[in-house]
Length: 497
Image (tube, rainbow, N blue to C red):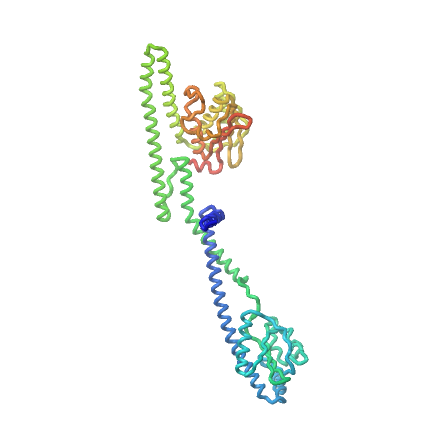
């Protein structure tokens, strides 16, 4: 797989994961941006805090190491018999920040802690003590207060009397680790020093995102998200109005112009859209006027030709001539009907679809058609004359090809569905869309007297789409053609007005 194909696959995967709306994508970008900024700032802050902590620990451990070196030099200078006297005096005085004892052997320490902090402290103590005291071996370890042993008999620190100074090493309930330094003063004599480094949580595991930090990030994220939603909503509202106006323009050229307000870019877009709507309306009206004028003007020469045809002596020629004129006249009437059928300039009212279908069925029965209406439906907002023309075209088409029309109504809160089935031969699936084109007929005789003008289905679909609906054709499994008209209820009135 090439790099380009992998990149295309990644882009497809990312596009599927993105929200579908512009508002959702803006919010996602804002959230990801805030999170990235928060994490980056926290990473920088953590790095700076860690560097500062290590510098502080380096300086503090070095100072304590020099103090320990001074203490050891002092005990080295004392005669052996005076060392215990000095220790007793220190304990009677309440001790110091060091706990010092002289032992006959090295006391075992349960060493704890790890990481760069401990390595820095141990390295500083070993380096300073070996250089200051001129010795080769220094034991530097850390212990918990509850496991620390301090004398030859390995007495626990917690078992010492308070006056012996263990209170300077016990800081309940914090219980920080105790630094223990042991070195050999002379054979059989070990100096033992225990002290605290005043740095909280020296060996505590570092939590990269603490609870307080997470809470702060959440508060910042919610604040930015709330403000972003308000700003994005005000930014995308004009786009929503533009999309709604475009949908209305597709259904009704007489829809109200788009409001020209807001930022300059939005105003410029609204002005251009309104200008486009006006020009389309003018062109459609001009087309209708031109079509009507041509159709009207054709009637006069057709009438003159018909009069002359009647004067022909040859009956056969006269019959053929009149048939051609009748076909031409049917085309003119079809063109006028098409223009009138596409003219939906009428108010929207509540229409009872059941009553409308029963009325059409009664009229068609008078002309020998068999129409059956089943089901019920609530009234729907529509242009009454246009909807009547749409249904009439569909039912007449079913009666022409199938001699019987079975109409079924299926109603819901979102959609009204009217299915019209005939008993005819159906149509090839490849022609299901082609028959909606003007002057297209599948009737084999090609006669305007038997096959109609081929405009009925196109006009019906135009009216349905003007109401936000659709007309589709499908062959029934048991024979015949099923024409399905769907009309939405939600937003039906808004889209038409």
